Length: 209
Length: 267
Image (cartoon, rainbow over the protein chains, first blue to last red):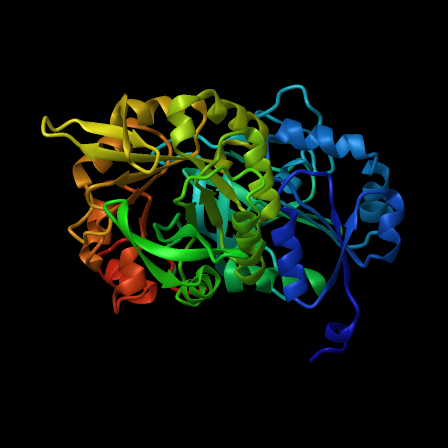
């Protein structure tokens, strides 16, 4: 056991009433972290890690998140103090400038670019089920070239972030970014909290940051 | 060597009935035969944990009493327990009537919500739910029975009531309304082990651009393979097969891999 593994980890789940936050909470508790819900700026003071979840249409999630007023807090956390933050599913897509799903609705713009609809070119959309992610960069102890199957459930994808980099790639009809990174921000299109052993392993890698 | 594309899914079905024990109502896990003759087989949470250990890809949970899910503390707390004790996708339905029902189930820990009777009676629910939660969250569960004429008729209310709709036409309609998946069940094959309805499955799979989960009739590992290869399904769901057979999802998975069906073999 590394010394880091014994450190107290307090995960702040951004709670803006957009999605299945309970399953994410359960997965982090299982990984040995404490979990608090972040609804106001003050709530992050006790946290070591933040998670930005999101299930629903892009526009709905973006409007709910903007309405919380948490954006400056999240940006200070991620890009001034540079502490670890993980986006999941639409929580990843929100980091783009916008999405074809909800034209005219602004995202957080942290990693630029647009989220686009997956083309139904010889494949079925939504992309539902277990698909392989290939790590194009090493991250948090996971080596370059590592592959694992994770559970996906989405119709829109973040093909090319404008800034930051694609850590992991997946293919469904065409290639898209399954994991992106900018500084200490990591974001995943799939659901680690629903991906059994492989997902818990990824959550542990995030907690070791 | 890992197949680097989307895998086909094996999905155990957990069929739930409310059992009144006098002072308390408990959820019990059952199997059904042609949507009738239910047999109690135990506790849903214990069974779900077994399925997770056996590498099931997802779970379908259905309240087959069809009682309104809104405020149903028995079902909602069951979903909460399933979400707390397993780390796999949960698709939940039975008695879903409104967008708010979707919200309640998602907050309890469901990942997807399925609609059946209400999809026929009020198809705008599909559109409203897809706009609010995204299509990937909206499953339409279609139960059908094949008539003597060969027509596959859509049934609702636990496959007790025939509708005006035919299966392929209705499947196309719900996909256009924003459904993200179709759970397609032949009510006359349910629990019989006689094999899936490959003809109707193929017709539906060819008619819609969204994934089809086929169900009703799995009795042998070969039936799953047929569902993928001949039926064109993305997933096969089974209740009785996994509950009573010596076969478990790991063994079924090995059969499928040997037949060349892309399937998850390691976690």
